[in-house]
Image: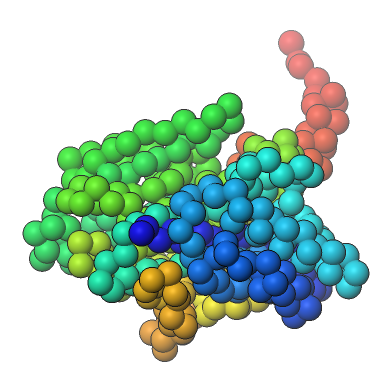
Length: 366
Ligand code: F6R
Ligand code: MG
Ligand code: MG
């Protein structure tokens, strides 16, 4: 029987601004799942990254399964109730729709799901990012699946060498899912052309060309496309199966050493370096910096091991120091140039209103 991994993640309220959920909030989500998951889930873990709560679950119902999605949606609603009772900031922020119809796609929470026949040993990584958007995973995905500078397996393993298929979504198209499939290694330049535009083209999934199996799944929610206005950054999640015919765990982690600049940070309106952090880390400096956590698991008959915290190793302390330096350098120039996002991405209405007012005062000199 096939196993499904599902991550459903949302910001439903936090302490002291957008820092982290309260213990009671986490517990109420946990308690709901514990009480209602019998017969639906095989296993689950509830974690947080910054102000977002993620429900990672295993089951046999396949992706977009109504029972699983309803359970998680209701758990997030139960959490929202607690967040309101405690007066947490932004209670229920990411739950943008009232009525549930089949699955949580397009309702606000980020979703990433993978379905597969378990291998003898099935290791995978669960990434959760905060204060950034799904395009943050574009560069790591590119480097892991296309670049032997990060993925030694592309040179050393005859199977990895056969390449991968990228499924890339144009998230500006909101009528339906608009998808292109491109193959490595022959189309890596075309993949790069799309993935450089992190606000529009997003890796949705990666598939092995040897086995046809899905290796990676990324959430593609863009909250502003659902709500029609700024409601917070999309804070994506990603699942990646690792080892054997897939990249090694360390090859998937390698690109995070760069601390690449991504959109997000304060008011979701700035560029900042993506800092790899330990699990259950909080948010701080300038409502950031953008962060990503990585939990490594093995799943067997649907049962999850405990997590190995992939960014807890001392190596990443050194990376974090370097990323802090990059963050400081960018912050030194405040709102200027690339420090703040271009007008098209500044979704806080204020600046648009100022421009409209100022526009009236421009005079055209003949
Ligand atoms: C970014 C984020 C925060 C808020 C900021 C202002 O994703 O969540 O940076 O945008 O703290 O929040 P409000 O407008 O709620 O006061
Ligand atoms: Mg938030
Ligand atoms: Mg968040």
